[in-house]
Length: 304
Image 1 (cartoon, rainbow, N blue to C red):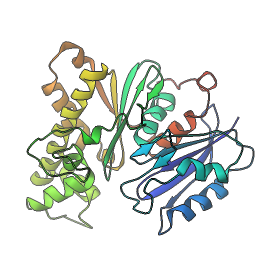
Image 2 (image 1 turned 120 degrees about the horizontal axis):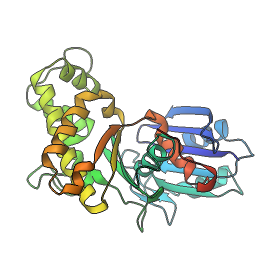
Image 3 (image 1 turned 90 degrees about the horizontal axis):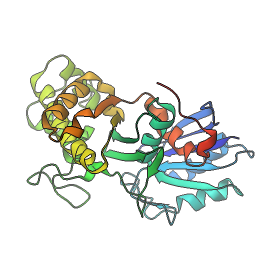
């Protein structure tokens, strides 16, 4: 049994063949390019052979899993785009399943990242160009009626904060996404010591002790902790796994985040919550997409 896993991000598409034992072949990653539909078709033809038994897709959102359509914020050409039907036309006669990229990241971590089955309730957070997320309950992704459950980036953490492109104000994404952190740091006097002033340069300067860069990460950590504890109070979470490009900062983000979670946690059951960094890096979403179409009984979770 082999499935085709596809990860649709705002700036890149990735695909791979995945088997129930977690082995992965033909992993390929490409920029979205000026014609995302053509890019998708080329990627599927390159990676997906005729013998796959299913296709799992994790996509940046919003998504509509019932209709199989997506409207990724960073892909303007795709608004209400029939992603599931398009892929189904490229790989006919097999089931196609769709979920949000944050949900697939969480499911991938639960399956192959060594978190299940010990974590009955796991929240995965993707901190990157935006902030996405997903919840896995007892080994199954909780998608919600439309497929958009787990959109933690749009929990309000500052009612007097900045307007968010989603239409709300003070969303987590306006503070903790990579571009938001950089924008705040630049407005408060940061100048990158070397290279382009992006999230990677900001993390480097924060690790070197540059005060404004460190403060940008502390500010993001405080906002993330508020959103995480809101989710933890709702879902009685065991564990939070943080992935995405900004998580590459490692302890520069994780240390203040864990401290903020410990400081803000009130109710006793919140104190057991653990916060870890992704074990699977950029493959988490692909594993989660594969798990959408691999029956649970044939994909035992990896141990810690």
